Amino acid sequence: MIKIEVNMELCQHYGQCVFEAPNLFSLNDDDKLEYHAEADDSERDNVEAAVDICPMQAIRIVE
Ligand code: SF4
Image 1: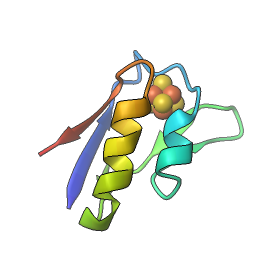
Image 2 (image 1 turned 30 degrees about the horizontal axis):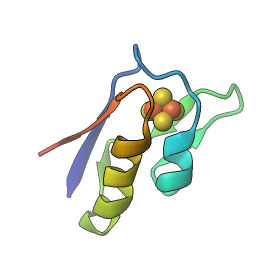
Image 3 (image 1 turned 135 degrees about the vertical axis):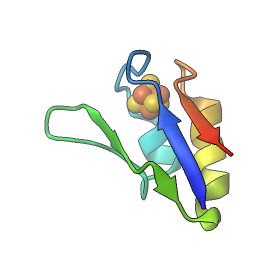
């Protein structure tokens, strides 16, 4: 199990993470980010890709 944290003070809701890990990140009807705080280990590569691509460095994996 992976735990994910997004710093919503930093997040600008651009949605790059949504492309990298669509099972975990989405933009709601108001174009605000929503995400799952816990993910299966099988999502690790996708979450790491989201961490790397986030222009605000707002996503982190909590080990
Ligand atoms: S990529 Fe980063 S800034 Fe963009 S929506 Fe995701 S967490 Fe927010």
